[in-house]
Image (cartoon, rainbow, N blue to C red; front, side, top):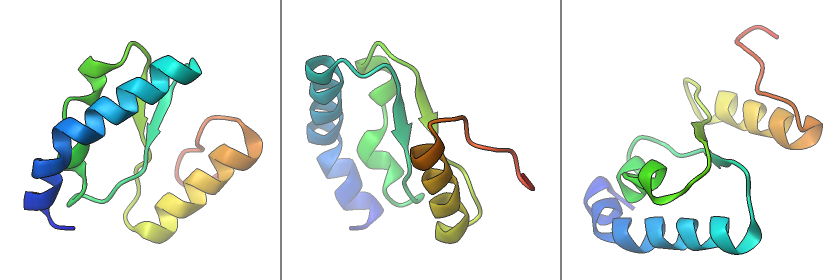
Length: 82
């Protein structure tokens, strides 16, 4: 997918996320996407009534490590160096 395609899918993706949040009663949304995919979720913050946080990192390895930590521990993502 490229940025143009991500833009095209935006309405569908944001709607699907909002529906999942409402249906499943989620209390937070975590986003783990590269920069080319971010346009697909532009506006998600205003479409849901829960906090939206982004997993940040300098590449897929760092983001993957932070996501693994989040999922396996249920805690907040550590700051760089933890």
